[in-house]
Length: 177
Ligand code: AMP
Image (cartoon, rainbow, N blue to C red):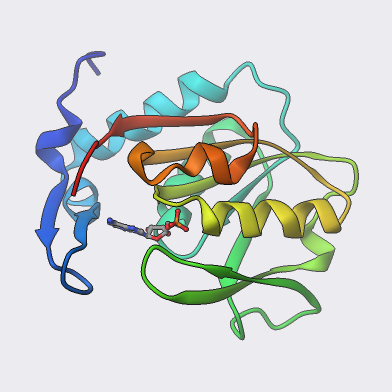
C-alpha cells in the first residue's frame, strides 16, 4: 500500500453527533473500505514492529477493531478495556470524563501483565481521558503503558497534556470541529 494513501477520504464526518456541536469522525467507513483498513493495519505494523511490547490494551469498542489485527500480525496478547459491567472476571476499574459525558472502564485484573510493557489502542483520541484512565488501571495493576496508538488524533483537545509524556502516534490529525 502506498505511503500517501488518503485516509481522510475514507473517514466519514458526521456533524452534531452524538450531540450538537460535536463533529464525529466515523471509522465505520474505513472498515467498509478494505484498502483503507489494510492501510491502517499495515501502518500500525510498521510503527510498532521493532518496539519492545508485551501486550496491547484495546479500548471498547472501536479500538478492538484495530488492535486485534495488530496483535495477530505481531503475535501479541490482546487485553480488552471494556465499559463497566461487561467483563465477567475480577476487574480493576476507573471513572473518567469524556469529551461528551462521563464513563467508567475496566480491565480483567488477571490480564494485566505485571512488569509488562503495554501499548494502548483506540480509534480516536480527543481529550485523552479514556486512554489516561486505561493507563492508570494498567499502572495500578503493575504494568507499564509505553505509548498510545490512535488512528485519528484531535490535538486541539490537548490529549498530550492529559497523558503527561506518554507518546502518542496517530495516522491522521484534525484541527477543528
Ligand atoms: P477522549 O477520552 O476524550 O480522548 O475520547 C475518546 C473516545 O471517545 C474514543 O473512544 C472515541 O472513539 C470517542 N470520541 C470522542 N470524540 C470523538 C469524535 N469527535 N469523533 C468520534 N469519536 C469520538
